Length: 422
Image (cartoon, rainbow, N blue to C red; front, side, top):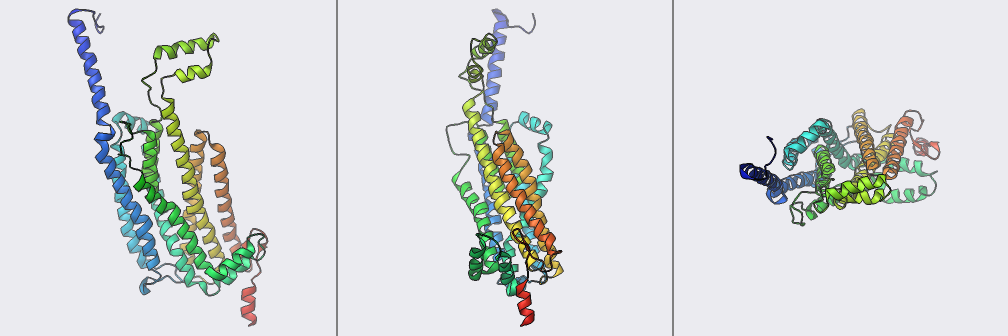
């Protein structure tokens, strides 16, 4: 009868000791990964993402703006941003790599070994390398974006007038844009777009970091899935997509929580009653041992996270700047030098790659959460913007004026004609 608990004597005592030991081990395990014990790790992780986020969205844009006023750093129409400024970018990337390594390790400290094993088998940990390089591309693209208005300012001799030509035949928005450009010029419009990106993608994200503190007492001992989505949002703001992905996957695993108030016997009986028509599938589903409230809370946090990510990162951060870069590439085709063209082209390729990759990933995630129409609609908008921008670059080589718009095709360059006749 080895392995069974006797009802009396030493066997019962041994069984009781074994049961108590198991309960103590489980309690110790739960305590080890509670918010209270892990609070120093959480605070360190929050501080790390906050510091790198500040460097990314405050220091980097300020440096980009300073290049317009420091003589030896000023961009030109021939070369684009100065190569010497890449020294600062290289130092920034060193901090980026350090932050990614530290944040990855810190996030893994928040989960138990069995969860790490599950994620390893699911291939989650293998995705780190790909997303690490995506983060590097994203941060380099941000630098080209924040310096873009000042490159445009160096090319502003005939830039604004030529871009106004492309808006002449555009219905509804054409006259408004022409009037706006009279005031702000092309480079000013670019500065507005960049400022919107920095504010929406960065400053609001930093404010969210300061407002939401995972270590705060919310009545839950366990770090919930919705908490990990908060960490994922902070990591995205800090341009650490690998850490954001890890946090999202942990949140997905934490979606399912055991409800101690439910009875397994009742759940089993209701499953049997379905076959005899004594109950409904809905009633049996509600009796299952999973905590439905916790599951819905995580799903709600997941949907909000992915929708915001698609809007902020893809539509605002990538597609708007891609479209503006493509317009600049075409309008200044005869003005800019080869080096400047290459730098703008690299920026456009980086934006397009990010938009395509993120659209694919986010659409799949929203589909699994029952929000496929939202993801599909936003992805179609992103793909349309990418195709539109690609067409602008293509026709820069096939239109006599190098300028093309969606409503009228190749644009007649009256500005050059006026200059020639004058």
